[in-house]
Amino acid sequence: MKKLMILKNSQELWKIILINIILLFVFLELGSLGWYFFRYKQFFYTREKVTENHQGEELENQKENENENENINTNTNPMGINLAGIRLEDSIIERLHPYFGYVQKPGPDFREGFKYNAAGFISPYDYPYKKKNNNQYIIGVFGGSVASNYSIYEIQNQILEKKLKQIPEFKDKEFIILSFATGGYKQPQQLILLNYFLSIGQEFDMIVNIDGFNEVTIAKANNENAVDIMMPSTNHVVPLTNIANNSLSTKSIQAMLKINDSKDKLKDALETLEKCQVAYCYALTSIYVQNLATTYRKNVKIFDKERKKAAQQAAGETEASIVYFYAQNPELEESELYDKMAENWQKTSIMMQQIAANNNILYFHVLQPNQYYPTNKVYSEAEKKIAFDSDSPFREATELGYPILLSKIDNLKQNGVNFFNGVKILDDAQEIVYIDSCCHYTQTGENILSEFIANSIFTKLKEEGRSQ
Image 1 (tube, rainbow, N blue to C red):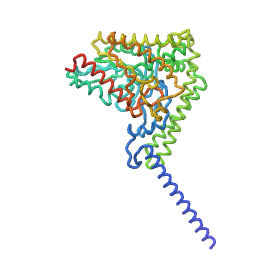
Image 2 (image 1 turned 120 degrees about the vertical axis):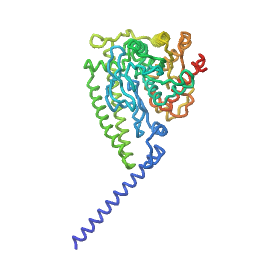
Image 3 (image 1 turned 45 degrees about the horizontal axis):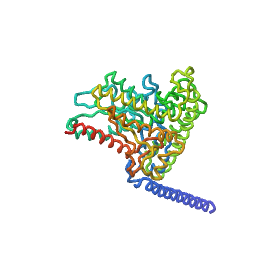
Image 4 (image 1 turned 90 degrees about the vertical axis):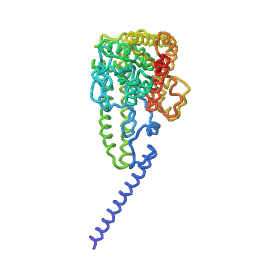
């Protein structure tokens, strides 16, 4: 009888445990369903892939502090988790280049339809690209990461192409967009790239050069590191030369190992996230992914801080390095720095215009918008958290450098440069247009930039009588 009572009590206990487990699952699932609906404005079980329509809510809860040297190319993964600036593949994707300073490591598809081609640029094509027929019209895009992102967006959406097809001479053209832009590029890299690729037979019918931000911010960074401001970005080249010279500090190596560990865990977590069939799995894994992303970015900042220390120590000590930099010694004063930068920027653009004209190529120069150059744009509190960083290394350079660039516009135009000032094009946008505290745009921002470039080029060609 006693054994029977123990058995009954044991069965009752297991029933209670089972009921509690079921209730725990139900409450977890209900809570997770509410969390998912609040975040993405759709039900988990009838959900669609999170797209631009839902990225605003995601972005409102993120503060991105990624630098230009992160070479940001994507905003979110297919599940809508914000992974801007996180490289899930190679940590070091740049390679030193004897002419351009550095390029991206050639490799497999960067995303559907794109790859890092043999020349080191993101494109569906290898370079030099040869026209398959006389009806093809080649547009080369030059600049930094903003220009690189523009070329990808243009290939995917054909905004410029659709606008140009309204002009009779372009109506039946097959447009080929070729990107010669990479994160951190600035003049005279665009000029050097143009000359090099023309010399090896690359044809162009039109060139779009999108720049300005890198010119001002990298001039400041180079100057602080005692490197001539016309040299390639020390933020990009010095880490590569440090690796080549075996001069990484212990802290840098430790941070790099932690970055790789977070990256491996992120890959596994994202695979799990994609396979989640119930809401609580998605919610818990999503939180785990965000924590991993935070850890990743924290260690990237540590690595970035350490490599900057190494850059300052190595500045001017060219005999200790296998790569030679022209020294900027003594460091330029603020007024001289931005005046010299802007003069060089103006000169190289005029030279690109002259080279283009001599080769029967249309040349258009666009000054990109940036949040640190004050305009009439009103930012929501949510976007302020995303777009601004009180410790940003870009703020001062943009505030001081952009007005000097703008003072050169009239002279550029007088020298035949088709120049479009884009600093205010995002002012009227109600949606969030920045994905980070550097310079990069959401799809809304990308669309505004693309529309501005297309309309500006169309208007210019119309003024020349081509729309008749």
